Length: 197
Image 1: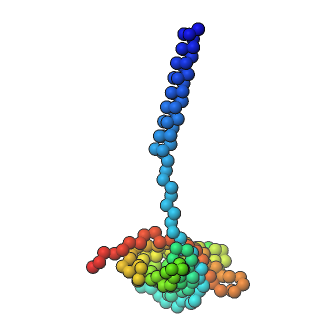
Image 2 (image 1 turned 135 degrees about the vertical axis):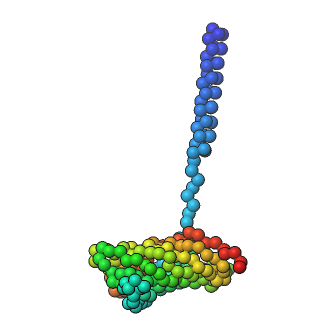
Image 3 (image 1 turned 90 degrees about the horizontal axis):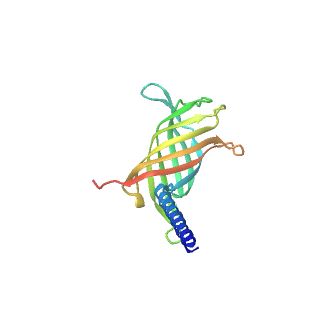
């Protein structure tokens, strides 16, 4: 009888030890394969209105270009302020279901903080359009925009910075106001302080 109890006790200990080792191994394996959380990219939302439909001209290859197609708007989120965007588009006239290339232009973003202790003008970011596209719908009145913006510099808090930002948005005609609007998100992917020359 004592031998049977001893045997059962030994078997129970082996079983408990095996389960404990299995749980610990799972914990270590789970920790080893656990991915770090994705970084949250700071987003600035833009709502803008067309201020000029540009001027027709020609590039060096004698293609028609709409120079200075411009928008003025308000930003909220990480960089609240006012935003200006001037684009050069080819072809000059939207083609339904076609794509317009953005062959240059410039942008500025004066930033105004809204914190109670330090509210007011914080400085500006500015730059040029590195590349971009406008993909038009079937009517030629609505487009999806994708821009890569070069951050060429800044003032005040952003003095001496450089880098890149992206803009993804939609260009459309507002039914109530019949004005051309531009909405979307600006993401400043890379901003670094340039070395002092």
